[in-house]
Image (tube, rainbow, N blue to C red):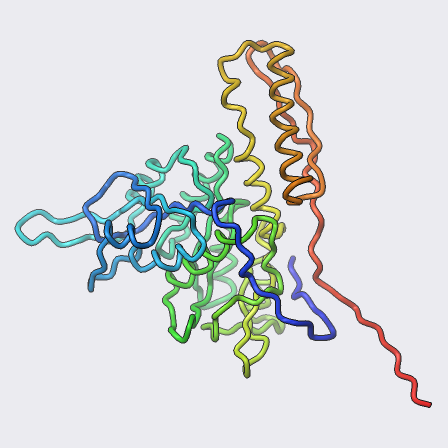
Length: 352
């Protein structure tokens, strides 16, 4: 269970604008776009996105998310769920059904990307489908995190819905943000956080960090007993809160997630899994030379992630022959530093 991080003396502002575009910033988007394209499309930048998916007065939630995702995304891979009627003046059908969701996920199976964003608030049944797919992808060494959106009116409703998520969640957007003076929809707000997370180093926590350019949130949560905010903390769901109404500073209360791990731990875990490039050894003879080669691959990843990038404290591993056709790569321990959630400042005043 999360607790609201505390500090007894206010410190200076820390923002989330420390970025490393491309480290783990490729976003897959499932949503309704203004296009007849049905295959997966790679989109390298926002300008190209608006050419492929022209702006329209009709609401396409995929279109609505584009600019906010590209705040930090290196590229998008788009699965468009819009279908069109036949005839002289075709009309779009933009409703995301479970069948359309499953078809989009099938297109994305074994595609390399870092974060999944569905441009829609999902039902509990739909989220269960997504969670099962993410688990299957992780099992096949395609690790993706999810940024989701959900907005409920009661604490009990949140508890029910959050049970459908799993270890792959990076952020649950439960509030609408006023960004650069404009109130965003829930979908845009979730896309904004997805873009911000994509642009951050994977070993950066959002806990107690100021979210730039947000001047208000709706709804505002308090953390007194029995409130929705208190329930979200109990369920390890991050949210944004005002720190200073005069300067309109808003910060992330915590980035602990339902699996009881901080955002940065989940992102680093997935980064490591995706970086273990041992596919070239499939089809090789299972002998000592291959085992040594696979061990060297893992050691290079350990050196990169621990000694060069400083993403975690250590990776302890071993490589062994499992059978005549199988090699076991055992990551025995991924050792992380915890985050600081409490600072005690002690002082003494002496008047002579």
